[in-house]
Image (cartoon, rainbow, N blue to C red):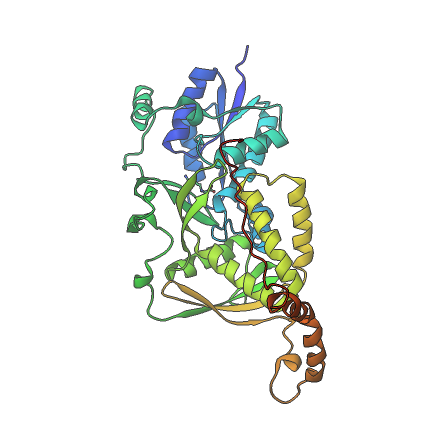
Length: 420
Ligand code: ARG
């Protein structure tokens, strides 16, 4: 009888290479390696070849960059999704797409299981597993690294015993993940939150002190919340994000140092490098200041936070997401225009913005000729606006009659130990 097949998310690194053999031995299954290009800057065809050399019966490599940008990156940008106000979510956005594409491959090949190389401590296992369970509840999930519980030395011994290629260059001292939207770097010396990340942490951004001595201005065009042109030149998503990564990185913009709250209850120290994401998020927010009503802007902060949490927590394929997406698309309908951003020595600042739908009205804002604002109407408005507070002050805050202010003792949330 033919062996059952399993689709493994294969990165070409040590863990997933060892996983190919380990699954063969432990589960007696044929491994189909799956690798996709999300803009991580690796040769996916070389990775595919390595999978076949390592013992996969089949290996698939495909370019998923456009899917990633159109369905994951742009929506998160439009939603203003930054986890805990800091992390642009590059890794978190990639997982549901990889998992979805693996499910497709599993169906095409009649596989009965899927596998990934995540540990049992992180968020990525959650994102993969929840997506598999949502889209293909019948598929068995295997997570070798979570299951084998080896030390690094034991893993290297296993690799040596089975003739698995271990990179000649010494393995990175960090654990990293990257795609076109950013790099995530953790572990090693970064586990001490007091220690500044050493120079080797960074690959896409220069140290701000080494950035050019001249500032640079860039113009980013948005249409209904999506970036469409860079310095007036229309570009597709890949080109535009690459231009943003390159320019912001050159000026040392996009380094993020985050003590983040993982879903699994751990606080972890993560360094992110996301020059393009930081620049585009900032520019996008500036255009919203110009084009969203005050009420929409206020309300959207809640949506942004919930959106970020659901991405981070692996709940991409949820109805709540569909609902928030509907809000976001509607909310972004007038977010079109151009933003001018200045980059200089690690700093990023808006210097100009314009939109055909601008709610900034010169005839209302000006102190000069042409003012159409009715200042006399302000007086009545102020009286009514403050009425609640002036009433309260008169009868409570400033009322000295009737014994003055009552004394307040706050109850404790902890009851006494004894019932007597
Ligand atoms: N903490 C980030 C997240 O949960 C990044 C994890 C990426 N993995 C890594 N090996 N650095 O999205």
